[in-house]
Length: 277
Ligand SMILES: Nc1ncnc2c1ncn2[C@@H]1O[C@H](COP(=O)(O)OP(=O)(O)OP(=O)(O)O)[C@@H](O)[C@H]1O
Ligand SMILES: [Mg+2]
Image (cartoon, rainbow, N blue to C red; front, side, top):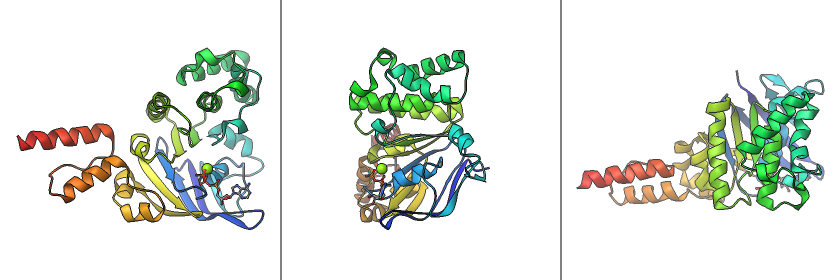
């Protein structure tokens, strides 16, 4: 069964802003899905439909095969957790610890379980030392991690991250990539994220949706989408540096295997080099 599905989803904001036009999207269990597209493409709007924050103008969103309704929206929000693009939309408690506890308390969990989940989330995000701090006074990257921890503590099956790497320093980005990649295997979670860092997409995703002007203009595996430079360029995006470089080498007669991630590219280069010697 599909965990999450959008069927023919259209969203028109007040003022006749057509933010989504007939979008179809599916997420299977334990998949890692990237949604890419220029500013204003509709990524955040799509995400806000995934747990009923927005209501479709037309079309529908199904969670575990069931359309989201007023009756099941509470259950849906346990199942699909969304970390907003702007952490200030999400963080409001007097301390980091209390902020992360807010979601689990709201789920009606007992004190011991809440404490346990808060600890786990602090640990997973590497922010134990921030526990007593006032969220409002944290740096942008610190707030981002607190916002992710708060949703994670609710243990959703589907974790939706809107621009999770925006504002993170290089170490923070590397930590986040490693963290996201553990979720499907270790916790059976499904991860959906948006990003403008195209070089991270292959590191964090198996499948890609490309959006532009409220529509899905392309989708496929990382290999399929990054093999379509014309689609990416037309959308105001670009092929990320690793496949771009390897493609160019291949076009210039170098016998080298295509690769998308840093590790695969390293292997391709070493193999090409070894063959040459
Ligand atoms: N609350 C709102 N009311 C009216 N229009 C909105 C609202 N929120 C978003 N929009 C419009 O909907 C369109 C899609 O916006 P959205 O935030 O979903 O894009 P995005 O792909 O997430 O962009 P970004 O990369 O900048 O985060 C834009 O044209 C935006 O101006
Ligand atoms: Mg957005």
